[in-house]
Image 1: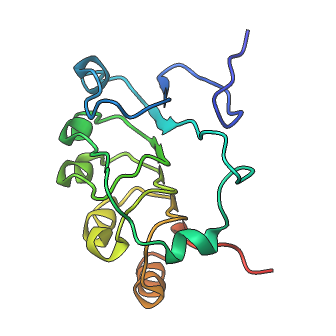
Image 2: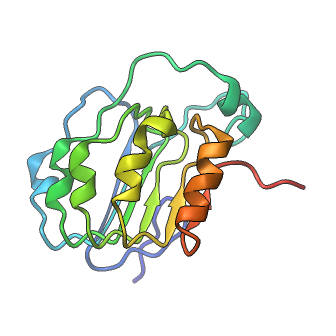
Length: 165
C-alpha cells in the first residue's frame, strides 16, 4: 500500500509529512528533530477555505507587507544531518535559523509562501552547497540579488517568481 503526501508525492521510508492545521504552538516535538535517519521532511499548514482557489496570485505575495504572527523554524533543524529534502511551505516563517547551514546533504529546499526577506537569508542559502533545487516563490526578494545568486550557482535550479507567460 502506497501512502500519498499532501502534494501527491509518495511517502517513502525516511519521510515525514507534518501538516499543521493551526499554528497554535511554535514548538514541534523533540522526537522529530532527534530523528537522525530522516531524509525527507515536509511541514506545512492546510489553507482555510477563503476566496482564493489555492493560493492568492503571486503578484499579491510580492506586494503584501508581512505582519505577525510569525512561525519560527527550530534551531534543532540542524540535527537532521541526513536530510535531503526539506519543505517548509506556507508557514509564515520570517527568518531561517543559522543551524540550517548544517544540512550538508540537503538537495531540495522549498520555502514557498513564507514571510522571508530573501536578502537577509541568502548567506545561509549559499552555505547549502549540495542544493540542486531551491523554491522560494511567495517571499520578498530583490530581483538583482536573485539574478546574481543564480549566476553564482548556475547548476542550482532556483524558483523565486512566477513563470512568465
